[in-house]
Image 1: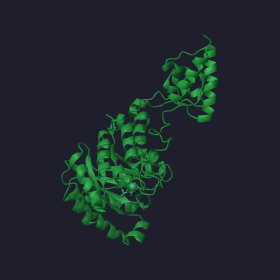
Image 2 (image 1 turned 90 degrees about the horizontal axis):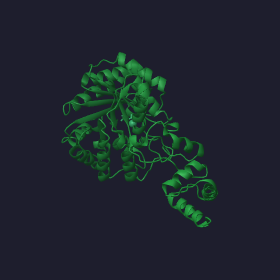
Image 3 (image 1 turned 45 degrees about the vertical axis):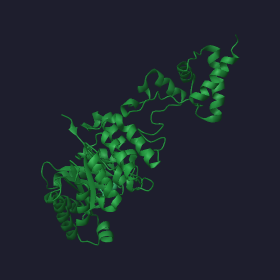
Image 4 (image 1 turned 180 degrees about the vertical axis):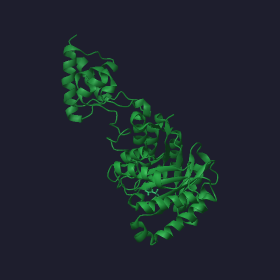
Length: 388
Ligand code: KIV
Ligand code: ZN
């Protein structure tokens, strides 16, 4: 049987924390519904102690969004944990996610705590969270820059206190695929825990490696991936949900694990987020960018018109996108022009095709992309010049 990897969506928490991605409570609820439709396993709906509005959003999502486990983030403070437990009270399935910095930089400059104090705070906060819920996740913030022996100790203490998921955040996007894969294998051997405990990966994209690092973590034994729609998140963002899910699916031969995601809902979740935050992903963004399934050059268009697999490794309909992929512009060739003209009811060949092609290239040089309205005008003009 194929191993299952859980998808933990943090668009509404880590994603929303990034400048430009703040959402209203209504927006968060709408997006939570679109994310639930993807069939993610966990939705991190917010950080209850961050603001009364965020706590209310978590409560609304906990009450109204069916399917996934609903999660709220908490520092290792009793007040934060209580705020999370209160916001989540009506969720049929709920998780409290407790985090505390463990790296020397975080201990010395941010927390002013010794190793022993950090371990004690992990022990007491995780145990306190377990008083409210059975499902507790613990994250040693900046895990990647934490001394290995101390990381093992911190995760073992969290597991002994009742954490059921052990997340290993690359908070500043510093690791590499080889390094994180090896780290997960090492943690799998060293951390004391029950057999049901799940290791999780949470990668940021500061060096553009969040997706590759998450996939390497899975190879190393992680069975939960934390990610965000369109890859939004602190600074350069989080691992993009659509990328990691489609990589696992398209290259199932390489990874041998599956997710429960309904990939046909990917475009709709991406567009909902873009609409709510007024921030579409870049045109060239993998999977969901406007160019991800678009072909303008003549050579590629000729291939696509014969068989889409010549230049596409995924089907647009698999992510819920309906498109023939052909974009007409100055790089396009006769095959694509004739095909699009045929769709518009004009059968072009010989001299008619040549004349239309010359007129089309002249317009394309001026305007870039030739849309259907412009092409119809060119074709109408050509027909009016035809000898009767
Ligand atoms: O990046 C990070 O360390 C986080 C934790 C709170 C999990 O977002
Ligand atoms: Zn993060």
